[in-house]
Image 1 (tube, rainbow, N blue to C red):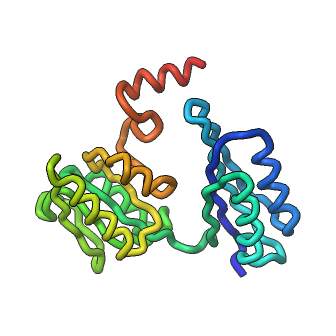
Image 2 (image 1 turned 135 degrees about the horizontal axis):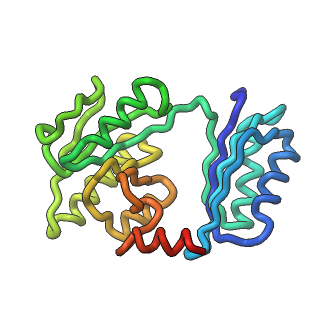
Length: 213
């Protein structure tokens, strides 16, 4: 039995979500070790991550209980053992410093992830980063006219590799609304700017407005 489980969830914000989730874990014998939550006031979304010791209950028991709560609250959620490496697909464009940083952190054990593939809209020769042995690189060129076909190929690659998380490592392409919806909750952007937290035009203005409230 894993000694630590990680629960992540999101849903429409409403009073009592934290109490319901933590109460369920307590009833099954779980002991919460870490908990973070975020309420997106603009979008009305609630996000939570909880790391907990499962006690005497197995992961299947927690999953069954969470299924019921998820149906009631409309939750999107995942539950996994903390020791299980997440299967990650990394997307990159021509500049590969973010990719290099991710691969370095994985190599030293700071990021417990399994890189199942790397894909980019430029040829492999455009990158200077040394890629790990056994990790394939997929060249998925894109133009405004071929964007639907390129995103279809990307969807197929995600399904083929079983990627649980897609990381945009300075991937300088805007995902379509349809692909963004498909990847909701399993795609992050690590571009070195405010873009991950403030989407759309004028991210610095949005950040200033958020900070002044």
